[in-house]
Length: 272
Image (tube, rainbow, N blue to C red):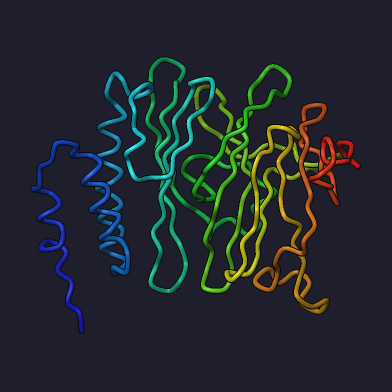
């Protein structure tokens, strides 16, 4: 049976030196996280957070080329933030997420830690969340949109969930008083609108969720259960060869169903 000594495991990573030190250290920490006990994973993630934070507090953090840092990152097109996310694949098949958000606060540059609280968010589509209660995900795209006089940053993310289910997320990041908030009531029409959208499907499937610049829409696979009696059990869902899309219309994301991606504008009007 493999024996883990946390001090012995971390010591080489803490004492090594390299020309591009941050990149090599983060890469080593991520390698160490794979298949490690939870305590080791959390310690290595803490090292990633502290070392990345130190880099993001430097004067050139908004403009520096950080493409070599092996973490998932999205940058706001208007230069207002840089967002790094990473995950810890737990031995039981679940995932834990961490993030650092570099943004411009009310008075100065801020580096904000994001704390994953997935297990404490039973209904993720109905709540606006703060950085310390975050519905963790790995974000791979950002779409800025205007809602009144404010900018909302729509984020697309991947979220491993457990051994049987994977999720994808459409999140909304905005700022109030210089502080980040996640979620906004902009999905759908009527009085009750979702704050974010969450899509669950079988871990054996893949789901397309991307922004199409030609359609000016978020395009996604439509998910259906493998059998009618499995309705609502996301672990048995997968793409059914049709597509839906969200169009930004009148300050909200309106759903278009059964979108024909071969036709101009998807062959659909916003909100159909």
